Length: 278
Image 1 (cartoon, rainbow, N blue to C red):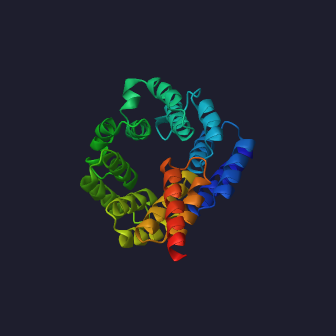
Image 2 (image 1 turned 45 degrees about the vertical axis):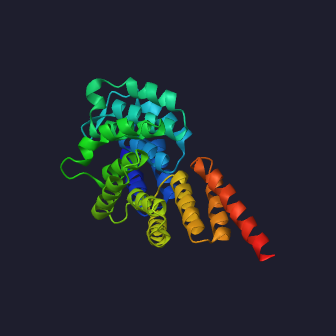
Image 3 (image 1 turned 90 degrees about the vertical axis):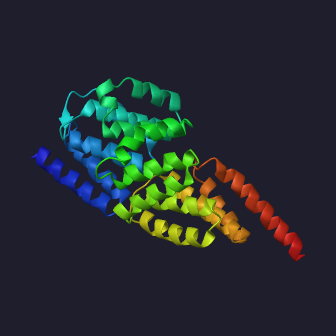
């Protein structure tokens, strides 16, 4: 009865995740593994959920165990999935050298799979290698029926390389494929902020905020959204609201580095406006 009961909890976890209930999904997947510790699908699903919750140390432990598996799931090697998951977790932990070592341990054929290309693109972007990131993700983005996730990642790589026009097109394509793509929406918002178009930025950010209330993403994405809100508020000369947005962003340990810089800018602007008022 345990395997059947474990399957039930695993399916419940899937339903809770689709409903945006991260804690409920985690509890259900964990219960499935308590009942059947070698439930590969539940283990992979829980590890992926932990990544999306930003709980990288836990995800790394689970993926490390999966790298020792000889099984397959959905026709894919669990060991490869575990290795790629470790790379993603280590990126989240800012342990980029360790992430590189994990990726290099993959066989060449495994490195060329779509999932590996996406993971390596994120690693290259974290390493500041935008040009190489573009080369890795472009074949997927320009291939047949690319997903919104691939298109948004392509946009991130293009934006990191200061190719603003193509980045905007990639983000627009991502949102056209999935109107609720938080990655695509935040990319569009960043393009708007960089163009000093605060009106469009606010409209897009409001859509992204509503999406992130329903979709599970790491706290770092919420922090990125708050940084963009803050920058848009600065453009609109709303320095007090900008300060609050940046303060929310820096509360997240994995906030973008520029969050602290912009918080200082907002505080300076608030002080200047206060002095003028006096």
